[in-house]
Image (cartoon, rainbow over all chains, first blue to last red; front, side, top):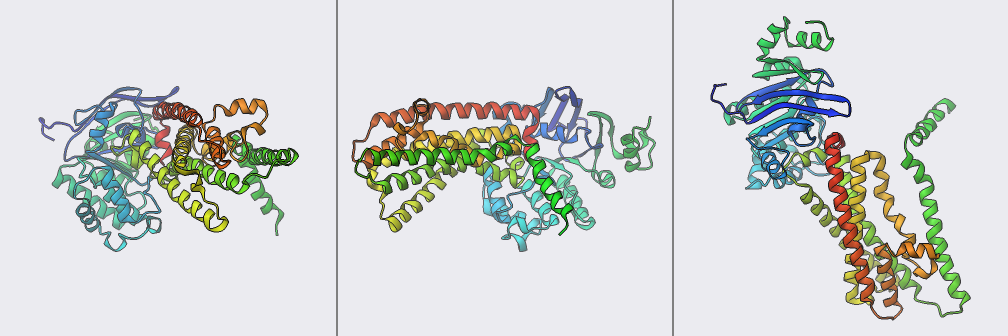
Length: 249
Length: 266
């Protein structure tokens, strides 16, 4: 990252409380174009809450989010922001009674994609979905579903992509191909990607920088090597286990 | 057959009721509503025969009422069930992480509701004509404003239901199937308002559908179209739709703050 690079996403002192429980505590970070920022931490660390706040699904209790310099809490700005970013999660599906092509058509319209048919055809080609394009979504395997979810996430050529455990249900081969694809689009299209996964090997491989969350706070940040050496771990998995088991570090 | 396995499944269903007030209420809800509606229908018919009046056009009254009632029901379902479809498909989050606004979402559901109403109405009217030689269009051009009022009321109830499901989650799903029927006994769908006890008649004054069905019956009985009835229904509908929209927007803001919006979609 060059010193002059302008972040596409900037979070300052972001907090979220549910009654007396503080899910996210004064978190600050930035995301730059052409970077994959890995967000990791044990279950309940606050990763999903942060992603939901970035997507305007949950309102922050305090702090600021600026995406492309705009404030997602303001309805007009929210629309502008969300038209330039996208999201994919293993835990979110697509309408199961629609065919793959119909589903992409719906999302292309939602995002106001121009030349809809060309865009859908190119995504179908790109994600190797041609043979199943007219199949009902409910009949797809989890690998095919993940590819479709990713195709949907690229429907509006996003500048920011939030990916919540995108490879969780994939076999190692498809997971590896997915990571390769993401690394390539990051490089060629300068997409900024915020990535969560419980697969530490994957996080080590794919992330340019990491944010390690624990009990709603960022307890470590840096490149995977920096985080590993800071916690004197053998690898990221080792670091994760130490933190999750709350060994005094 | 093993008794312990039967017992296990029996318990599985009883536990559901223990944790869900809506399920408990549902046990009594439908029988009570049936009793009310069919009780008043019986009262109406027995009053007519006791008064020795000539038999009215029952076919028109019941079939017409049934088809018009379905407009209200389909309109409500067009909103609340379409919303539930997204929740069941776990697609809800995908919609709300797109630039879609709440206003756009609601308008699209309203249009789905109108589409469903038109299709169901045309098929029902055709079947009523083919099977029973009943022509619903005898109501004439006034059918349209009556229908429109029922659609608006269906929208209002659908939006209210959706807001409650958003707030209370799947426990409130049962409302999507049953809430419209709560208004049926006092909407005087199958009988005139005069059949209802006085206190229910007063309550019916606040239900737009009661004016619609009174108006429809008046035309079927050969009386004049009442603009007053139509305007009363429309005024109430505008108030209820505005309140339902206000409630939905408030609820949406609240569930967003509580983090429930995201939970709804996963």
